Each structure stands twice: as structure tokens, then as C-alpha cells.
Length: 267
Image 1 (cartoon, rainbow, N blue to C red):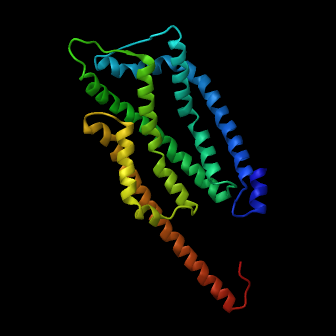
Image 2 (cartoon, rainbow, N blue to C red):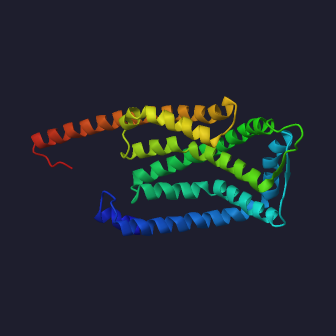
């Protein structure tokens, strides 16, 4: 009801700071509720997923262990929340989009659904790429261990590294889709993306280097490569959409001029 009222009284969808904070609170509650419910399901998937995450470490010659009595419980919560973030992604992604673009019109709601439909598979693809890169990074790091030492790694430290890696890969894949969505609703022109392409390439390489640390270049390029391709595709889509929007605007202006010349009312 709040969105509809705001749209009728304010067609541009502008909101006061207090209204923004209230909307942010409500959307956070919805997202947290979805995460909580998904975390319950994550508890049932905890064991097989934990085995899957530790497997690359064992294959690379490392050993994982719990250092304290409560560590297994902490790890269960951490893995369950990670799974909840993935399973509840359609909800919190929609709430994120709805907060960026308040008072969604019918057309904007379709754009939001398209944003979700594209973002969720890309999030999963990014996580898969991160998991594919993980063994290569582990082989490099564990290969630095002297022969007189053994890689006895605590699971909390190991999982913190792994989950950050997977989330960085997954979330990075969503950014190009967000750019296209903002362009579709007229917030971000394609020429702005083109104008700042050097900064974009630099930021992509920087994020890839931080998200996928490793001595071999493969670790970085596995993330940077798909991101560059996605950003290039997003830029092309934005430019094509801008061209179509300009044509529609020109046609509308010509139609308005014709109506005015004929003395007919203009919508």
C-alpha cells in the first residue's frame, strides 16, 4: 500500500529520507526472514556440503581439523547461512532491486523479474567458477609448505577463505545484470558505461585479484574473463536499449507535433 500511495502522489517515485529508512527496514526484515527460513533447510544440507567444500583441501594434500569443542557447531551455522544466502537469493535480490527502484510500475516490475531470472543463474555460475578455481589456489598455497612441515589447517580458517572466495565470484557476476536493469528503467545511460570503460576494466581486474588470490594467473583470469565478457554484453545491451528509447521518444515527439498541428489534444 505504501508503494502505491507513493507512486500516485509522487509519480517520479521520490521519497523522503525517513520513508527510505522505513522502506529499508521493511525490506531488510523480509530478506532476513527469508534467510532464516532458508537456513533451516541449510542445516539438513550441512554435512554433504561441508564434505564437498573440504574435498579440494584433501585432494591438495592438506588436512582439516577442529581446534575447539564448539567449532563444529560454529561451522554448522556458517555453512547453513551460506546455503541460506543462495537459496533465498530470489527474495533478497528482489528486495534489493525494489529498494533501488521504489514504487515499481507494472513495466518496472517486469524488469525486476527479469533481473531476478538472470541474476540467480549467474550467482550460481559464479559460485561454481569459484569452486572450480579453489583446487588450483590450494595447490599453489600448499605447495609453498616446506617438506619438514605438515598442512594441518583449522576448518574455521579454511572455510572463511573458501566462502569468501565463492561469494566474491557469485556476487561479482550479478553486477552486469544490475547495470542492464538500471538502464532499462532509464537510470543509467549506456554512454556513461562506455565513457568509463577504462575504470570498469581496472575495477574488474582489481576485484578479481582480491577475490581470487593465487600465484598463478589462472585464478584471477577465471573471474576477470567472464566478468569482462558480461560487462561488454551489458554495455551492448544498454546501448541498443538507449537507441530504441531514443527512437520511441522521437516518434512520440513527432506524433505530438502532428496532434498540435491538427488541434487535437496531446496525451
